[in-house]
Length: 528
Picture 1: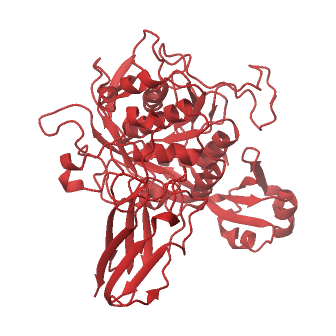
Picture 2: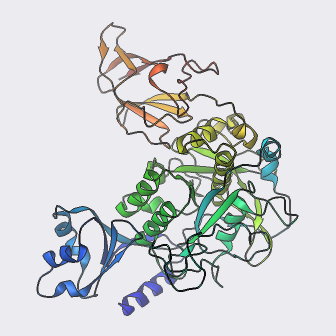
Picture 3: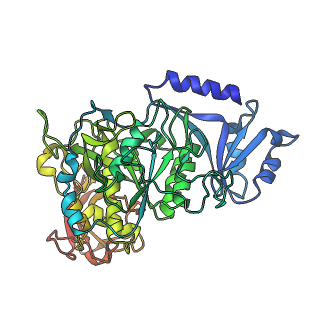
């Protein structure tokens, strides 16, 4: 197996400037609750089972299976799927290339312009938070001893430092401050090659607050769980799965990731990672991407919030709150936040400017943490609803990107206030390619009360006969477009009953857009 790792290391270096993935020939990931050893013996006869190593991923029913190079496990996926005790099977994809999403600038000490733009100071005048909220930052390493970060790290209360024992029985020895899932040890510290990205992101979320040193994060009650999943070894599906399950099982409330994930579409293990963390009640954030693309592949993920980047400083070409030239956009983007440039903590130098959706995502995640800290009784879904409906509309400054930068640019002051704005329908259209009528939401519905078949009145050709209509897609907190199948030609009238669609606070849909809950949404459209 060592020779195989050497080959992967060479590939990792030689493809550093392109993004590719391939299925590891000798590794697969399975979801299995039973005796995995017996399962393997039932599939592989004549001692072949002894060539397979099994690694349980955290304290979950997920397992990474790795075989001797002479046994290609990837050829046995169908055999595993046929076993009644196996929930799911997936390749362990290896991701090669540079997946971080940022564009570094020269390090210059400047103000953190983004805090004034999003009115953080006014938010802190209301409250700096009550409850400790843990944000897991998944990245390439962290300068744990940075002067402005040394007191922000979440520490495992049930693990004794340096005794070489897994005191809390979570499957990780001495995981007192995070974990390195790339190299497989208890030190998420940065190394000579990595760590600038992770250190900068961690500082945006939670740099020392009001401590007279350097920059500031979003509040004194916010702690950062440093999880290194990207480094000297090739990046794999199993690393991401293990990172997300660890965060979900070990105290994190929020996960923020600033990496290129378009290639992860169709990766079952990655989707299981999102689903697992989502099922545990976490809020998931990811950068929207730096390719200046409309509706990038990652917008298919509806359990995570995708964050676009806006300017935080005027330049010759763009002003504050304009979409960053590099930022992706589209109706699948959920929200926007300043990311261009952002001044935060650095690995080699104390403080640096960086730009990218990598910087926008932790700004949104940090604000979500502040909301939760100020309102500790909120549920996960209520935090997201408050984040989404407290934004500033910046479409007037971005006319080319109207309704394509999420619910708006984050506003910290409005986000921590007690008043909650209801969810609205900001845009609707018929898509002839998918034969669906689409409703674009601003805000978050309550997934618990969402009914795909109720509350929709659809009439054809102004007749009194109502056509059975239902939403095609499931609803999760980052689902911002609802789709209704309409295939027959004709003129239609659509009514969405406000009383049938509630937000996580129990408020009705603001269908008539008057700023208050209630009022049906009405629309007319033609199918040709």
